[in-house]
Image 1 (cartoon, rainbow, N blue to C red):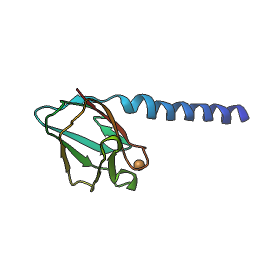
Image 2: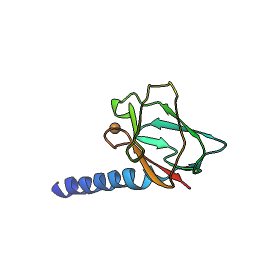
Image 3: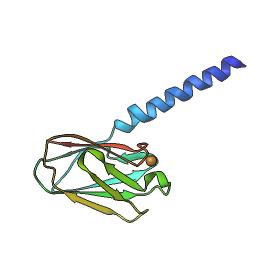
Image 4: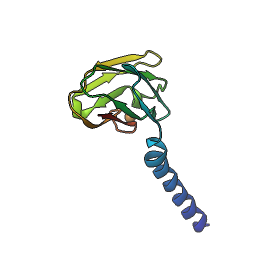
Length: 119
Ligand SMILES: [Cu+2]
């Protein structure tokens, strides 16, 4: 019995690791033109790895589908940008990336995770 419990625990941990570190980092896209749509749903940004050009205005359109309060904010802590997201009401976040690099964006509890790559 305790073997089954332990096995279940191991599988659960494996699933959580997979969900957060493997599955979540999978979707990748580049900004086409100057806009990109980002779906916020079920604990993931889609796409979650976004390439944007340096020095050009870019619009990240966040489309929140998840009514969980976890999803109500998106924060780019390194860029001093944050926004409130409303369910099914797209939010256009427009700014000009001024420095190259990788910038994480998350919800306020960092359950949702994405990365903006400026190059
Ligand atoms: Cu959250």
